[in-house]
Length: 380
Image (cartoon, rainbow, N blue to C red):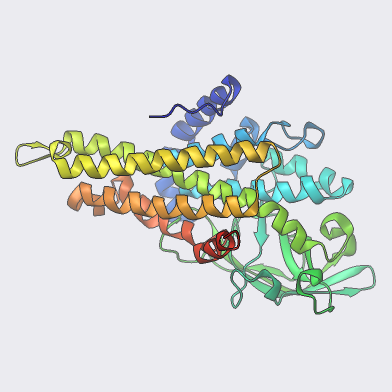
């Protein structure tokens, strides 16, 4: 309806490469990955070789030094293909952003090249069993002991939790009582003594995306592992990167919505009820027309937000609105499209059923949508 003008030819060429890789190397095996509850490390390395991991990482640190639109393409294509197990790529990309923007030179050289290649898989240990969106209330603590920190605590819902080699841990390092000033991000190697991982958590959806709890018992790490080497900056670092994280969730939701809508239109053209295709019923056409209109609106907004990202002008509130609108729409699109499939929509052999399982969590992670409403409300 409205042509997209965001991308240049090089972005579309990258899209073609990514799409071919996903269709040939990932889609045929995703069902097995769901059984295994993880994506093989080989796929991470092959994705790294194609530039799908951390495309925006500067060339000096092993990346391609490309603009954020390449990350957007990767997110869109994973969502288009319905390969929810690869959503961990986005978490990995967010971890790279922390290092690129706030890491010391030594930290960048140590981790970014291996992250770009897929040799090292990264995770963010943010949420705790008793702490959700309120990051200032985290209980995991890092206590200075000479030149080291001793870390104790537990984290949950950790994407890439099984595969991860590097963990960006949100922990309290101070006792000022000023909340955000006491928070630091600490780089913790997953093989350090005292780090342990739970079995994969049993989830409603995202079955191929490895998600665990992480436990830290007297984990000793050198103080130079504090991101940026300056404690007390963690909350600021998190807030600076949350705009992209939330926009990327919105991008995923809109791309997935578009894919489900296209699949449903194709289904309703083929499936007949009372001797005529479902799409020939006015109720079906009107529902699909409404969904298409809303998806186009969401796409236009996310594209505009990406333009602001490129100009370093995207506000946290605008990103929150993108996450809120797009993820709510994704759930709506999936629900109505499943209804148009009838009983087949409840069968996992149809993509819409898998989207039904996978879509719901988008309204929770990256900050629950009720928190997004609060952030937008502050602009009133």
